[in-house]
Length: 147
Image (cartoon, rainbow, N blue to C red; front, side):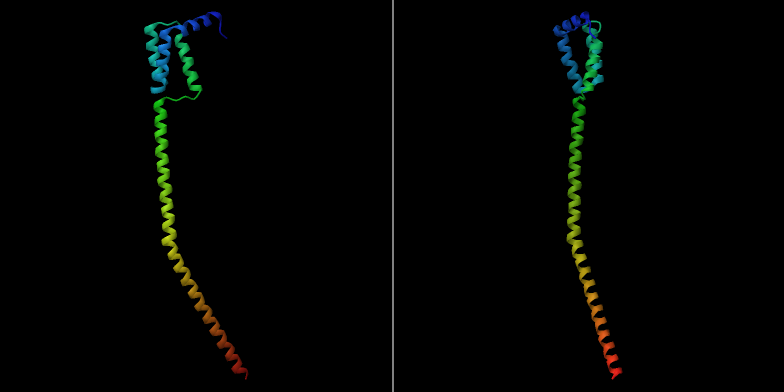
C-alpha cells in the first residue's frame, strides 16, 4: 500500500513545523466553517509553503477521514443544537397546552357531562314512575273488571 519513499515523505511531513501549523489550522477551519472552506484554505496554504508534491492528496484523504467518522463543523453543530432546543421548547409548550385543554375539558366539560347525566337519570326515573303508575292502573282496571 505504501512504498518506502512515501513513508519517508510522510515522516518528513509530520516533522515539518509548517505542516503542523497548517494541519491545526486546517482542522480548526474545518470545524468552524466546514470542509469546503478548509479545502480552499489548504489549497492556498500549500501553494504558498510548497510542502511536498502530494500534500493536497494527503489533506484530501484527511478530509475524507473526517467525513467518514461523521464529524460536523461547529457551526452546523451549533445550528442543530439550537434547533433541538427550540423543538424541545415547542414540545413543552404543546404538552402544556394539551394538559391545560384536558384540565379545562374535565373541569368545565365534566360539570356539563355530570349535569346531563343527572338530567337523563331524572328523566329515566320519571319514565319508570310513569310506567309503574300505568301498570298499577292497568292492574286495578283488570281487577275491577273481573269482579
